Image 1: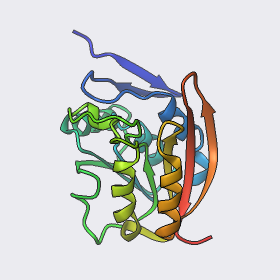
Image 2: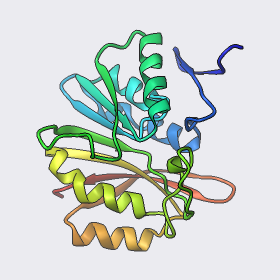
Image 3: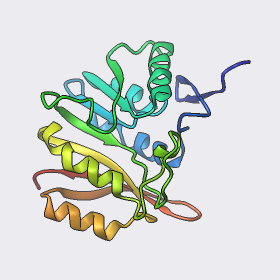
Image 4: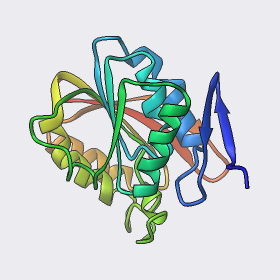
Length: 201
């Protein structure tokens, strides 16, 4: 049986029914990624899925680390990097920053988090289940992200109008994050927002 595949520009990616498949949220990030990249940057792709964001980022940056809680995602991302002959990207299993040492810091951290206000503890459900208010995982991520962000570094983070954006903005203010919305996309039942976060104005 042939693996199902998708194409993005001149890149080919194998898919797996047990790994989150790229959707509108993924493509909103990809459409706004290039002007955040340069050949001297170190990039972290949190929740890498099939590896598409990490692999695209690797084309225009120094090095990329992609992590995911789903072992099948990590194995598939490795396979997709090899398929596209991308050598400056690594992948590993990690529940957020659990398997990233405090010594590892990045110029750019990208996260397409689980943001739907649902509870689903299945391994595939971890790709979209953001807890009761849709920001449970995001808040946990942001509590640790600063120590892995180099001076002048940025975070690209996607959220939905279905998430509790009011509480999210309050958290950012309390914890010293500055934010701006750099892109948005209106869908039938929600609007997606791509945030750029920094630790200085």
